[in-house]
Amino acid sequence: VKDAAAFYSTNKKLLISKDCDEFTGSALACLFLLSTGDDAYLPCVKKYFESYLPDVTKIGHNTWNNGYNGIACAEYYLRTGDTNVLPILQHYCDDAALRLNFDSGWNHWGCLPGPWYVAGGLLNAAGAQVLTTLLLAKECGVNVDEKTLLGSLRFFYRFAGRGTVPYGDHRGEGGLGSNGKDGTIAAAMHISSNAAATPEIYTMARNH
Image 1 (cartoon, rainbow, N blue to C red):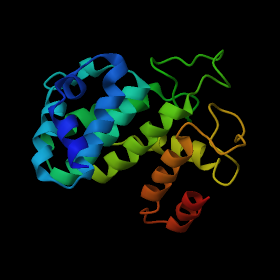
Image 2 (cartoon, rainbow, N blue to C red):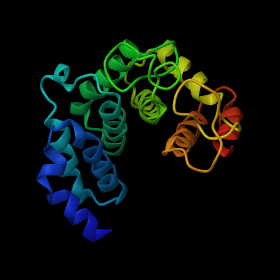
Image 3 (tube, helix red, strand yellow):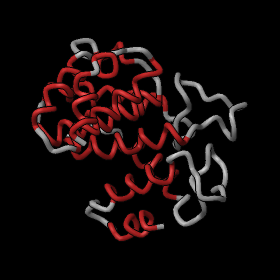
């Protein structure tokens, strides 16, 4: 763990790059550094998110990037209480509301669904991270659009206990592999189990 943390905390290309294909890796690197529990790595994560300021409008509309970065940004705030990153997290939540399709989920990027892509044009492998971002952002006190949050929560909840989370807007799939979607939704349902009302239904969904 120490060797990996040393690598990620000194890899400037990974932590600072704005190349589209590397956003997700950067977010995961930040999450890993936060998971070590060592405050020595917090400045690296802080520097990464500061690179998005002061103009958060340049972040863009990429579901993969915004979902993973949103999770990392929320976890950083919950760990440190650094309010400087809240405008970034707010942008991810506003972008999610702007680009929600069918009151359910998100596509790869942009505001219009691509109906030729799997079923309905939704991409759950990326959209699942956006749901988790919204749930964590609500924990952080950020303004989260309730219709967006509840619509996506209802959409993903329906797959609990019905096979693996599918790629798009269709029935749950069989098999043991889900491209990470099952684990992500389990995490989202775990966060949802903190709800004041009927937390047991989310606990049940998490377990199935």
